[in-house]
Length: 154
Image (cartoon, rainbow, N blue to C red; front, side, top):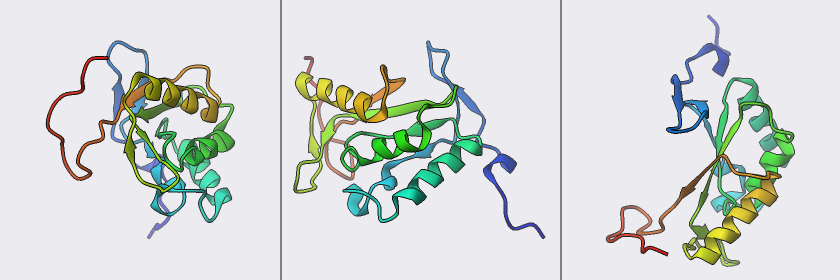
């Protein structure tokens, strides 16, 4: 009986093309949040293992990575860059804005135009990219559920 099954041997959930783009990804990607240390803060205990995990995921057919520069903060994107830069053709990096991690390790909203611009620049710098493929806005509300209201126009 075979016990070592690789991702190449199982379905990655089919493909998805982002609307109005030419970006097509496997539905199963890699969520990079836990590459950072405990509590998504600081470096991991074993940075080389984190690099190896990313390389193996891409080698197994994963072609999109979900990340945010506030993971670590900055650590996760720096690990992604170390592991995969120059990025292989077809790899889509999906990142998020809308939060910051101050020195106390808390999660704070960061939705002002200045915060969002800084978030884009931090992601680009730490990933080593001139442009970001996909950027999501993470609305910081109640930690375990939706918040009332809408995001104001700015």
